[in-house]
Image (cartoon, rainbow, N blue to C red; front, side, top):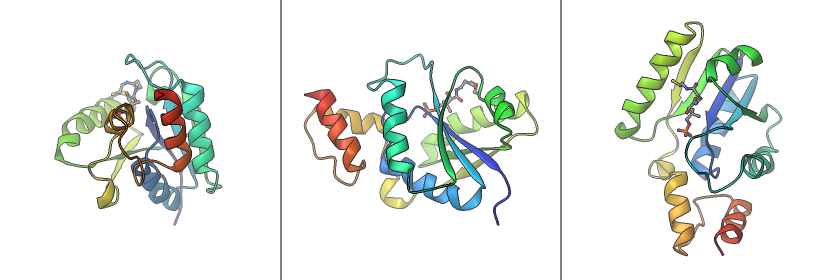
Length: 160
Ligand code: PNS
């Protein structure tokens, strides 16, 4: 049963098959799943926000209940603006837990009506991250099974 609007926030630099696995799971649970790309991250991204959004839109276009958007500032403010009651985040391993717990509890303090829901990605994605994907691409390693083909092409183009 689907009942609400959820946000799936992140940097998505770039989107990986692990992110898509979570989108697929989230899309089944919520009426609308908004993949929300943070605009003003402090870290230096490999892809610009518009490049990341373009790739995300391309690889999520098969799901009618998925939208891709950009947000600035506090996630809780964006959630209020979009009428979202849930933040969806993936936890791959125990090492993710501490950071995710801190964020979830802080978001709860800032907006008690907003719930964070954690989902486990499929096992093949439990060691996959955008950071490792960027590193493998920079060092010329194979990207099959890690990112969708169009993202692999964009990575190759960016690096070469
Ligand atoms: O993919 P990431 O980089 O782990 O995603 C982190 C993200 C974007 C979810 C987080 O940095 C965030 O929500 N930033 C928005 C600013 C904010 O609300 N900060 C307080 C969070 S407790």
